[in-house]
Length: 496
Image (cartoon, rainbow, N blue to C red; front, side, top):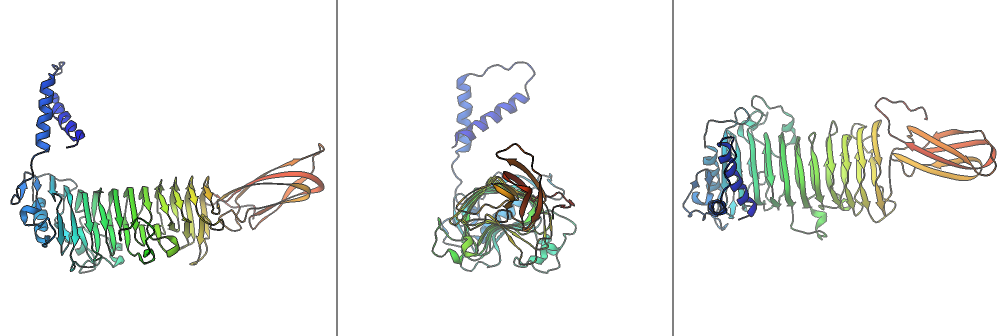
């Protein structure tokens, strides 16, 4: 029993009693009475587990009582589904969002069992909320469907609103179809302390048309498709979890063969916090707006083998924030970045950021205060992929204040000082600026060493990311220049 839970129970009892008291100063309790209440709370929390035949205790449901085999020898699919169905049948007359039954904190306790299942544990189509499933292992059997997920928050009503008679997980087009009538079917669903082994047969968890869902302290392995797939809905919080297609701690000799995606967010307003992805072709796929990633460690398939740590596959308004993440021998790919913020990240092993042109637009991109460590000075930290066409619309791009170790520093800001005796000083920024032949702003200062004269000087050329300053007479001069490629929307460059 954790002391913090005991303390919370005691404080709750004291608060409830205090709320009914008068405004007078309460009488101080004796120490023995206080200890007695702690002992009572401990007895409640440390109650012995129910006997195998018990199906429920209040609002706590036990799948073992429904016939689930905690040893993993026999198939437990039907028993688990029966427990889930009865738990979702609890009624108290209250709702969360309109049409979503508030189940009042129903708990499905797996009691640390190891359950083999041959079909998905699909939540009832009527939906519901205020539910916790925790404390056990689900493993796909050898005949588990290859296109399904171990746990599916997916109402049949959702699929019936689509133009497909059956739900096809592999068909991405159905996500473009607007949902008619009811928009959400599940709310306040929590999956906690679970190990989900897909046995290379399908995926881990599917979340469809759900709002305010939590997946916390879970371990996903052996998924063939996706570890977690979130479609539509919003505010799914995934935290303190590990995901890997194969059990490895890095440097796997079969890394080049990794497939699948650990987390796919085809949804808006979700948060990933403190996640480690240790094997998959793609770590996190983002295909929705306003998602936030914090403390995500990706050491899945390396960039060298074609893997991607975080792929922002949304060539439209992305509004994606990636903060304090660790890209370990893998990198980030962003299609047409629109309002994307990357900061405080660490890229190891030649991990980089690729900006991929789809419609040729970049607007509102910040890559700041990151660290890059690699093996070759020739590998840029940020690069352009214009295989589908060049970027033609570029504004509000700031790539600055990053640092490198054995990689090539790329920025949208350049500073150089050129010294010498003559009439011409050239500062070439082409090797360090991201965009070719594009300087939006320029400032320079001219310092003449030696005699106190005032020579005429001017910028005579700005092209191909080089700046030329010239004087009429030969002087011993020092020219300092600052340039940037950050333009405001609609701003015209007068330098080109």
